[in-house]
Image (cartoon, rainbow, N blue to C red; front, side, top):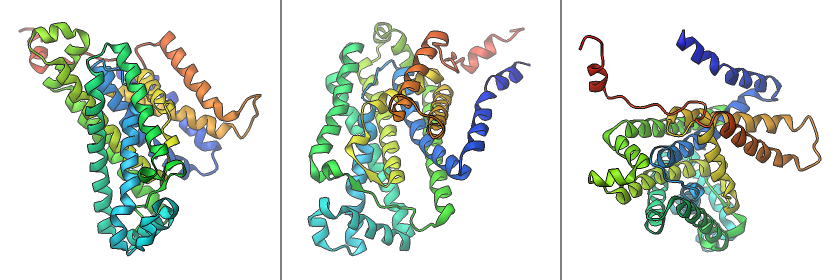
Length: 367
C-alpha cells in the first residue's frame, strides 16, 4: 500500500510529459533535447547536492566549474586535432578569425576517423574533470576557511571572475565571439547521431549519480554528514574539516567540469556569456526543489525544473505577455523556489537517515 501511494505521488510528472508531447511539433526532437539538457543538469545538481546537501558548503559559484570544463573543451579540441586533420597553419595563427573553418575541418576529419574522434571525446572529458578539480582546489584555499555567508559570496565572485577573463582574453575561447567546437560524433548521421550522442551523455550523467550515491553511503559520506551537522564535534574526533571540505569541493567541481565538456560538445559552440550566475541559481532551485541531502531528490528536482522550463518554451507560442516572454522562465524559477520553501522545505524527496546493516540486524525483533 505504501509503495502504491509513493507511485501515485509522482504520477503527475509523467502525465505532464505526455501532455507536453501531445502539443509539441516534433516529439522525438523534444525528448532528445530534454534528455541532453537533463544530463548536464543532473550532474550539476548531484555535484551541488554533494557539496551543500551532504557537506554544508554553500557553493554559489557552481557555474565557474561548469564553465571551466566547457572552456577547456572549446579551446583545445580543434587546436589539438588540427595538425592531424591537415588544417592550414595560417588558420591556427589567426584562430579567432578562422576558428569556425578550423572546427569544420576537424569535424570532417572526425567523420572519417571515428577512433580518433572518440579518443578526443574521452580526453576532453578527462581534461574537463581535471580543470574542474583544479578550479575547485584553487577556489577552496581562500574560501573554505570562511564562514558560510562569506564563503557563498566569495564563490559567486570567483565564478564571475572566470567568465570575465574568458570574455576578454581572446586566446582562450576567442573572446566575445565564442569558439566553434568540432562534433566527435560526426561519424554518425541522421537521427542515429542524435540518439547515440544523447545516450552517451545520459550514461555519463547516471554514472556520476551512481558514483556520488556510493560515495555518500560510504564511511566518507557519513563523515561529511557529521561535519555538516556539527563540525566542532567532528574536529574533536580528529577529523580535518578543512581538508575534507576541500576534497568534497574538488570532487563536485570535477563532476561539474565533465558536465561542461558535454555541454560544449552538445552546443557546438562555447561563449563566455553562456555561463552567467543564473545557471548557478537554476541548479540551486533543482536541489532545493528535489530535496537537499538526497541524490534521488536532486535527480527528480532537475527533471521537474526542466519539465517546467520546456513547458514555458512550448506554450509561449500560444500567448502574449506585457513583458518579455523570455523572462517568464525566471519568474517560474523564483515562484518554484518560494513555493517549495513555504510548503515543502524538505523537497519532493526528503533526506533519509542511512541505517547500517549491522544496526538494522541488531534492531530486529527477537534479538
